[in-house]
Image 1 (spheres, rainbow, N blue to C red):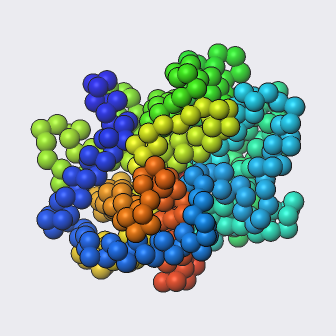
Image 2 (tube, rainbow, N blue to C red):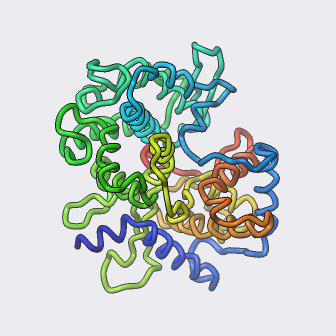
Length: 405
């Protein structure tokens, strides 16, 4: 069973299972969606225009949480670096792991109405950027720390976090509701417990997310494969996800079932996505690079199956719902319609990226998928959503618990 669990935690499994769904779509054998690859070039052209608008020289950074900390033309990273001026390089990396892990776990969709007013700048932010700024401000004031050191998140601080503190930090009230607030709190509290349980990854004394840096540095001589970082994330944080599929008591995380996949075992129908875990992995690579660690095989990781990338595919006509009535319904994250949508998004992102590279005459090394996402498909998905729907809401309504999207 360990072999199966390791497989389901790998990028290879994500691509293999998603491509099985994609191939069925090409044969029009899926219950909810069909694929129209004649729209691929049009989609690639749209994304390229968005990329050139935001990055005229195509000098695109990674698609990671760090981009959101710069929203509103404010360099909060520089603010953090100034506060860390007297820290060692290793300790700086640990602090940034603490911040990135907490902030990404709080990054599931906020909903269309929630917003955050940043007192320090007088600016208002919503959605993912708002969640980033809110979590940043909570972090630098020690909200996730046991107060041994304000600039950290640790097991005791997370376990003792209360809903009132989260509501205050995210400015949640009856007029400013945040989707899945209780789910987010439970996720962080469970993280506090898991930090203690996984001491080989998070440390024996003062367990904290940032101690994963030590764990990773032991695995390579200043060189790590991107998949090694993902595996550490999935192994270390797998137990925090609520009510998910398990094998031999091991929580699989962002793994779901689609009955259209054939096989003799139930696990043959499992489709892994690990969206937040891969988003987190992308966000942890930069602090490692600052430490001088070389990250290799970056393109092993997959695109992120969330509603911006998936919305782009649907809004550009690459994906088409077979029953338009499904647009009016709200779908649970584990429903086969959403699983199908996400699987097709992963496969299409690879093909969109390949088409973009061909058009720009760039290699996969020169324009890795993580930069296509940033440049890129995520922003293009948001842009076309704003063009088509008031408030830029996703094309499909999702009943989120605050821990998936």
